[in-house]
Image (cartoon, rainbow, N blue to C red; front, side):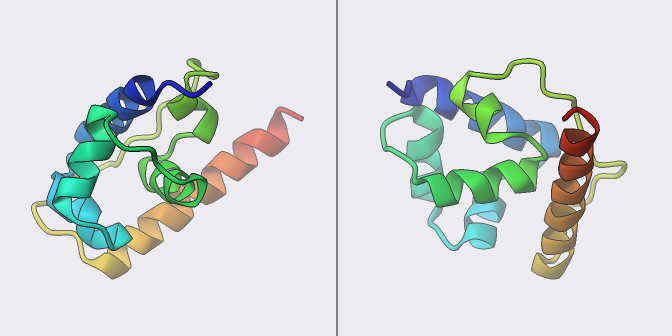
Length: 108
């Protein structure tokens, strides 16, 4: 059984590590800030498709958020900005996903 508290804690930690506010994440994935808060507090279940999108945005595996894999390599942004456009966020998500896929291929 999935522990939504663990998922929520890891979602919050990953968001803060990226320097994002809940509203910025909500805007990016098309949800409300309140919904992001519910997910991070573990009071609402999150769909697999949404968890996948957040995992890609944060540069983490789904296993990490589910508490299966705690040895996830850290991928951090090289810069911080108060404003990152949606287009830039999509590019960052793509790049993180690409690096994660390369990492997975190396360890097959």
